[in-house]
Length: 501
Length: 108
Image (cartoon, rainbow over all chains, first blue to last red; front, side):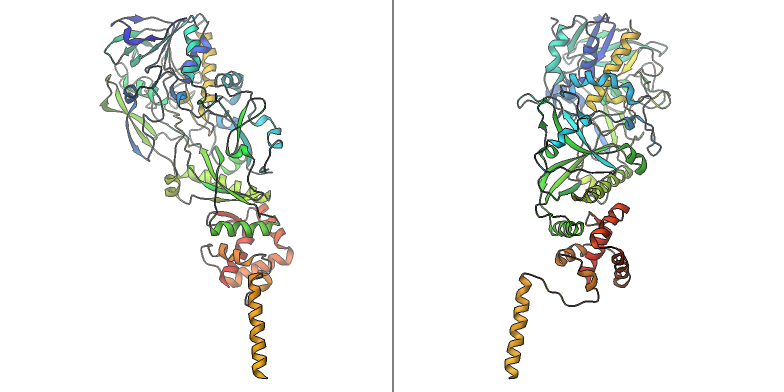
């Protein structure tokens, strides 16, 4: 079994010459290495962090921000083997087919391929994230087995969809890729995993058309190089962009940035809290609305309200996933609304129960929601990032239309009613939280003028540089990205097997 | 004799008010034919008081009467929902007829 190699022990000036360099040991990098293990491709996996969290290493991620308040740039990611999976919540849901479509009401939306291109990879991705059997929306008897009231929404713009969760072992967090797959990486004969290996530069050949080598540095002062046939950046949407923008020795705008696109279209999933109050006339809801429930087959599931594709097209709304949160008390107006409306509907609401409603939203792609590099440098001389964070009013308006439709459906089904708690932008922003799902920055598009990478993840204009992970998502979906980025990475693995054969 | 009648009248009035504990009594209004459709007029009035904007009693009551010539409150409520005639009151997404009746209850 190969040990994890501490890059701090590599002699200065050494040059490693693998077939493939994978930059980043998070879910994308590890999934790709696992997909290619036991192939004839020799791989070095370069993780900048250690095998566990180190606050000094984490400081490499700090940066500046402007625009709407957002999480600190070092808060939503982890510079350690396993990357973001060291602190993820395990929420999984495949993207919907409409998420891949170019939507006329949402500028810059659409992928260069449909969901069918990812279908062959979802089962393996589901296995890697350890989310149990593939059920999601395909099992009708989850609600039938409920022990409490359910909310049959009937016909309308929203339906009850399902999250599944990465397996929780006892009270331990969901699958952490570094811990879970570290031994598999070490056991793979063709994979050499390094820790403390910071890529500080992507050095292009003189003609700018290929990567010549990667500069590697360690925090104890070692410098060496990796000269691979192919390179895959899998360091996360922020760090991939930083490396590309910071590597300016051949192309002054940065690697792959000849069309000024690297760093643009950054996105996250806003998760404003307590966006609405949902009343169930029949009383306390079945447990799977408000918390994860484990089924007999081991799947861990939770209900969510999702807009149908037909409603998204008709009402021109984005993706969203609304979840039932803790029970709340109603004020006098709320009680009056429940009593008066229930009586008008001919429904008994004597046991009515109110809940807070949370959500995950999809943002519209915005080229000005952008990462740039600043003059400030980190400990290894790499420029730090600055994020200009934005949310369009239209994004809130779209989700508000979705909530209004949910309210209409609750009334139409005579099962409850809804209060929307946000009137204006100020209301939304004061409830704002973030999924820490870093998306965009190296978006995928067949046209080099509209995307940094092509449909295979290959950086336009560079013959041997790929990008993996959710940074290539050209539009985002409301579904949590990990399952989807792992599936996309497995697809990249198949592609690399072909082109590197 | 007059004193006895007055005392009896006072006792009756008191007894009548006492029953407010069980069934709220309201002074007669020109809109009782509409308000009688509300099972709990007091709660409706609380809701209606949150409705913002102008509310023209004459035109809105005429509109409600027109609605109830064709159907009862339950049917009118369902018709509103089916047609998407929803109004937000304090953020609550509610059928229009319920809101109009509640606003009427709060303003008479």
